[in-house]
Length: 181
Length: 242
Image (cartoon, rainbow over all chains, first blue to last red; front, side):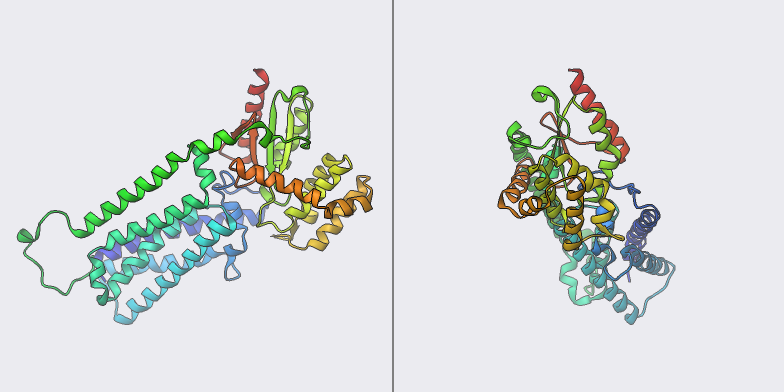
């Protein structure tokens, strides 16, 4: 595993971990006091409250950020271990890649839910979207030598990916964005 | 970042301008920025032109407060089952309705969101009460009793029968003719009133609730509900002072 990927895991995983912790704290505050308005509920569109209260926010029967705390902690730890000189065996790298596949699939399911079902954006959740995609993408490239041709355009693929999601966010909340101008 | 199996090229001879990756990345970023920015800018004029008075306050609109000549008009697009709307009712609009009674025209409009299964039945109940001249009473009953019909424990309620029974009890409490109320809830005319509000909201660019308009202009403020409430009052005061 390359050191650059390790750094990405530390920084990306760290950002995801912070977002998951904040969301968990917001969820606890809301459970304690149902009238509590989360710090990130700014208006009808940028609203953690409506996202956190949706059924999709507990996809496996418990709040999603708990999963985020566990998973991003593994991402950060893996990055730190590699920077400290750990050479992960093949099975570890494949298993880690499988984990990132789960993460990226889950994140896209959540994006779809947020844009088309809940119809609100939650800033901490978008942090998770933003970091999960490169963690998945660069882990994929690093794990599978057969993907070498794609490495030559690695960041082009990443920004195209972001651009598509940005376009979907723009169109889903069209009225909101156009009212800001 | 990834390891390559090819032998390393001589770094001196290999440097021939930016790599394919850098070029493609720049192209994607520029194209995306141009397209998204262009689309936003070219479409910005649509909305303000549509904010005409008739779309905001149609003939026969319900009012929570009324002033001669509609000197200052506050319009709220609301969803009776939306938790944010209930919070705004408890912390902002209920007090505004009292404090500005008779000084502003306050028009509540229906904007039931798809994600709230009881929002349309509640809107129909309020409209049906309006047919007997008791819209205000039902509006207040729905928000004051929010915890009793709109939610089931932690979750947004979805039990239509339970909610309908609650609406009918409230209708009886505020002195409505129950048989007429039941018939009005089911009538296409009531449904059309809710649909008209939804269509007007869409035309005005409403996509969430609550959405406020003061004198035809969309009102938006950030911060907590209390902050928004203060900003809204300041906006109304400014309009009244003119």
